[in-house]
Amino acid sequence: MARYFDVHPDNPQTRSIGKVVEILRGDGLIAYPTDSCFALGSQLGNRDGIDRIRSIRQLDDRHHFTLVCQDFAQLGQFVHINNAVFRAIKAATPGSYTFILPATKEVPRRLLHPKKKTVGVRIPEHTVALALLAELGEPMLSSTLLLPGEEEPLTQGWEIKDRLDHVLDAVIDSGECGTEPTTVVDFSGDEPEIVRAGAGDVARFA
Image (tube, rainbow, N blue to C red; front, side, top):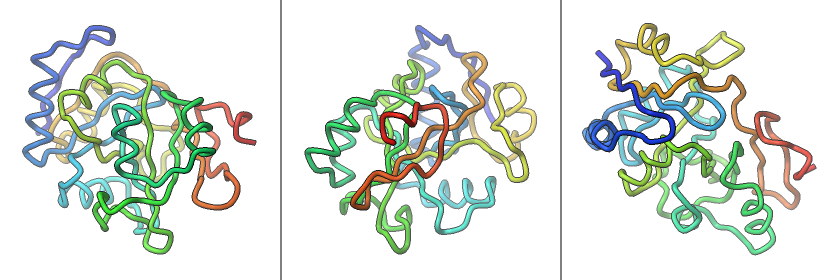
């Protein structure tokens, strides 16, 4: 049964954020708000968390998981990034973008795309998500909360609690989220490729 946390969108309660991070560190799986839509999140080394996300979303092993990072210093530990790509990504973050890049050895193998050895990374522009990451002190493994067979992600914390109570450990509600997932840009090739057009403006990478 998922614990429900009603968190202020601009001044998240330290106590509530701390309790959610305790759940994450105890190998829990959470639903939390971002600047694009709600997402599922678990601690990076949580093997069971990966399997639970795959099960909830019915994902195959070619799905790119995302490491949600607090800042660029953190992001740079987990992906290889050259100067030109760094400048392009820096100009678009924080924001509603996920970037696919070659992973460093810091990324658990189970998270990598099996052929490309890549992983998604992003820095959200959302006060509650950033408060979580600051308290956790490391990136969070994440995936959009889009259920199988549905065209739009869930937007209400209470609805997520109602529908996924049996498979989550915590739900953070800080008001209604958007319905559009991040724009995904693949920087692992010679030219940037728009994999998914979403909440972030694609024009800057076209």
